[in-house]
Length: 406
Image 1 (cartoon, rainbow, N blue to C red):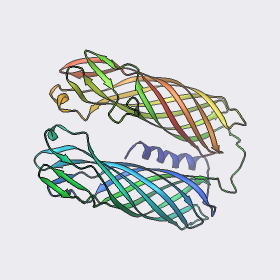
Image 2 (image 1 turned 135 degrees about the vertical axis):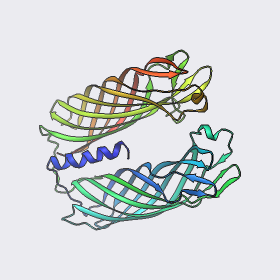
Image 3 (image 1 turned 120 degrees about the vertical axis):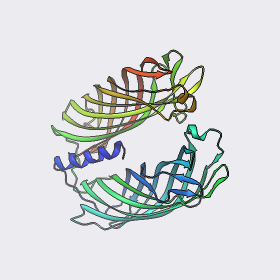
Image 4 (image 1 turned 90 degrees about the vertical axis):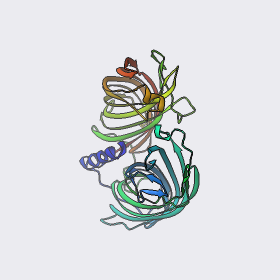
């Protein structure tokens, strides 16, 4: 169910282990949240002769405001995709869906405002597009792009780990019946209703009235981190005419999307350590042929941070060093890549060095910038039975969030 699910599980463990105990308040408070989970399509045949898959990963966000003890309003965005196929041909490609829905949140605090059941509901829009055409989709006329009205209704429950940090789970029913999907002479009006099941993390501002105001870092302070950013390979040429280039969805056409999660601890004032999981992908291209498919890289590395707090400990520059393992694999192979038997799937050592700075928005939430150089060598990519030993060093810049539980 995605990297975020694993990290949110760590959130609960760290929060409980640190002795954190929080509660909701009756204040008017702004909040931001992230969610990750699974989207279940409720109809396997979305339109006549058009099939979709179920059980796909979902990621989303929401921003809103608590208007008092029981009522809140928010804007929620959710993105997921399904496989699009027809009987006899198989998978033609992927069908991406993004919903943006204003919602009302009705809460009913329990257990001294620590446990919060809630109901959600709203009406908004859903945007869809067809992408990553597969070999069976060659020469097939596919029309799917569009925007339609969508609605959602659901329920969930949260537990406050601190006065301004809530972890929870929810389930929502997404109503989506306004799209048209046409594949050659098949298709028509589609039913894309889905059941969305997610785990959530919500950060609220300001802190509760009983929260300690000064930032006084203890000796042992656990946290979890999330980073999003851009990545660029240090060299495009991999040898023998093979190249690694940015994806079609690259930021500005030059930076591939980068994702990073971590669980860590500030051991002392000047020292921190964490376990990092991160990933990104690029497009493999053979100069004489064209695009072959995608190459994804996943890394797990223990990392050490040297910290130097400034300005009453609210600004924290740091240097980092890490060493661990990486895994490279090919996927979403294009028709030319199928004919050339493109493949990779191997482990290799990896390391990183970099610099960053965090700014504490409140006592236990820090926003930061980071740039680092990733050293990845020793992977192999095979094309037409010819194996190339490739260098996948990368430059990475990212915006990050650390949430502390002490």
